[in-house]
Length: 146
Image (cartoon, rainbow, N blue to C red):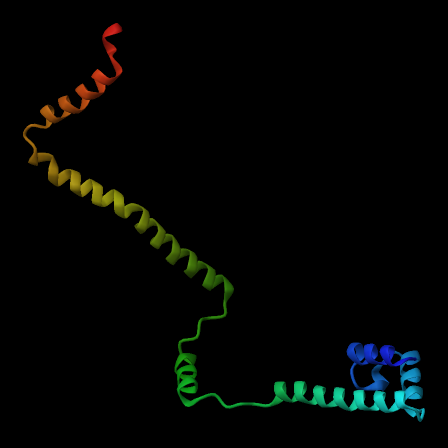
């Protein structure tokens, strides 16, 4: 095993040489046991990898307490936690969503109907306005040929 293969093994399998595949583990132990500069370099790489592993695993297992304001908010919201029943959540979501959608869709219709009802008696010359509107369209299309 050369130093590049050893570094690749450290990257793939970690600093615990016994956790490596058997043939690679045997070769890695033999590389470290030899007394040459490559063996010293391999030992340094193992120490560095052990240190890096300790930093990475130590960061994930170290508990940091939550700030008091966050802790209080979480505890206050525990009483208002949503129910876990998926069928109940689905029915409540669909029911709430359906009514909201229906009201949103009907709102312009209701406003338009109300505006039409209240403005119907306001114009005495509605026929005159219709005549102006339709006369412009009739002149534009020239229906005299029929």
